[in-house]
Length: 123
Image (cartoon, rainbow, N blue to C red):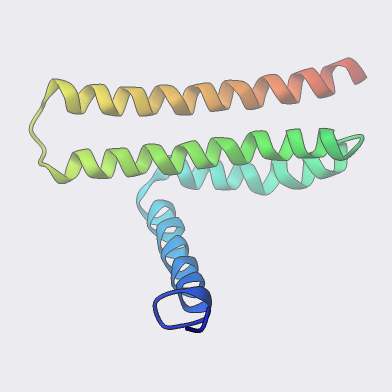
């Protein structure tokens, strides 16, 4: 059996890439927070690559913001799943959305701390 058959291998990888791109597009199209974080990334990623003194600093500066975007993607997925069940209020739906929002807040706090800890001592 070939490693690159129709249900696996290269075909699966190509399809997975397509699904991932659809996810990025959907999040960018429907989620204002993700659009804002993408704009911030357009500034912070090149800035992090420039300001980082070595590979570790560069990866921490860039990676901390990419983590924010990853958590936002997951938060948006949670919100879409909860919203799929209807507009009605439910304690567990509200809790799920609040927890997702808290995760984004922590990721942003982490990115802020990383940038501060690396760059402030240089001032």
